[in-house]
Image (cartoon, rainbow, N blue to C red; front, side, top):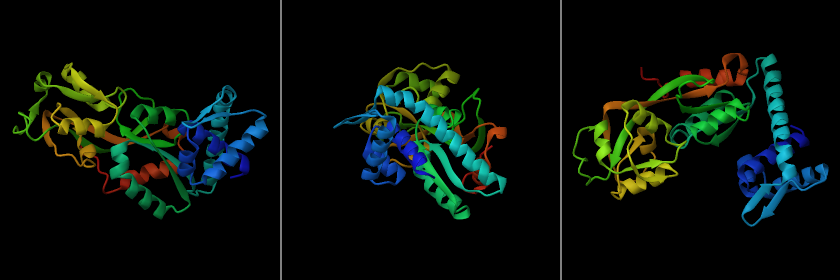
Length: 295
């Protein structure tokens, strides 16, 4: 990777995170190295690309004009690098993967370790986000693939890998905590704590199919906050089992009636647009004995 490519990668990461220190950590560069790269781009452009303040950095109008062009250039260079490797059937290069919090915490460390042990010339770049974030980034070329829950009518290819049960969670002293399972219709009579739209796709899909419109007592921005409020007796929430494995709260989890699941898998561009590296990673995930799709 030449100096210009490095600068462009740095420019995109700083624009994404709005923070030079965080961008340096994400790219495994020093903070001064990132600052120098941005300064060099600004000298080359002949204008200021970022507004700097004690709260971080933000693109100037000139920086915003440059952003899509730099993104397209980086995407094309990334595709070219992978195509060159594919000519010799060489599995190498940078694989940009999107994931969501609970999957990242439970599965990604082992996946990355095992995959890079088998293919040591591959570098993994991991990005966390919501399902919609991941889909958009794959479609726009910012990510090569991503783990998410199956979404209906989506243009991306989806390889199902495992099923994750969605449970009703409540404080141990909640009146419903002694039940063996919780009928969906009973949710209507109890305060519900949920996440902001975009982070609660699986739960909202359950409500739509059951034709339930529960009234949320609180709408919070992350799973940890939801579980914390539930543990304090503020209401009930629906939560995937995978997320509960990362929690340290004292909660009672009940299966729903009928039982509900989300399907977790790997989203990619359609097969004809996939690179050798993406196809290799997809095949690797499909063959992992610890990622099994329950039919």
